[in-house]
Length: 387
Image (cartoon, rainbow, N blue to C red; front, side):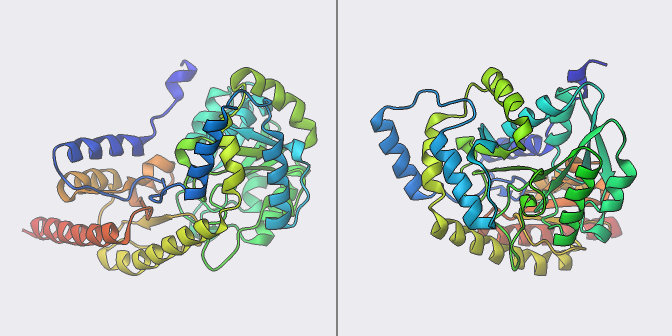
């Protein structure tokens, strides 16, 4: 089999494409499928972009990033987490997707493996395969908060394993690693001669608890983050990865060849974004209000939230009381009720037929309308099945 034949589609995008077709026909679709903030990019960032365009300095930066942004992020890590990170270790990438593509190109030889949680972010599997590596999907359930345990790493790590990935907070479940577990995972990966890669894209979007950075526990951990979620800057394609000093040269050589550099305009305005705490806090509070509404309403419709999410903007619901075919449920709900949610199969194989993901990156008005539509749809289908 050719490598490209192993690359799976991102199924939520197929749902989105169909939802857009229905909207083009004049239907109102409630979008709870996409993990994209529904808030605008903060106004100061937009203003900074206009000023930067007027200055006309929008040519290449160094491949590893604008030194000003690298230093600003170093200062930010000291303020946010109390950790000292050399600015040269912070590599600026075209989004976190660019960061992961870079990492696997540097870390993996053909046939080497990376441990991934199942359910987890689906594109990870494909990043690894494109680099010639092998994704090892490890089932994680509510008993471990849909996160890795140290025992799982120990059990599945082999002499061909190079890294384990944690998503903290998780996509699709919204759960966080407990501090002691995160610390144990970093130490276990280092003890096995590999790396813990911590995807921290949803840091800053947590509720009742502060997410901890993996670097607080182990300076050799690899940390990936970006501006897409917390700062509502998805289309700006700007992220970063913090690597150990020993990997900087290899990363630089790869970046020079496959990126040249992250978008210059996006790097410039990211400096302003780091100062937009007031805007990001307003978004976080709005997400929390939506989260609480769904946590209360969804179980009444048959969607069971087994572990309460503490971060991101997702709920991972068990639909066993409704169906054992989550895919069909999602497609029927889109076509018949005009509500778009994502089937569990997008995030892995483990119990995927009985799980769906809700994104609450949608307005309260839309979420309330979506809940009403789902209630009507489920009542009608239950009544029809009983006849």
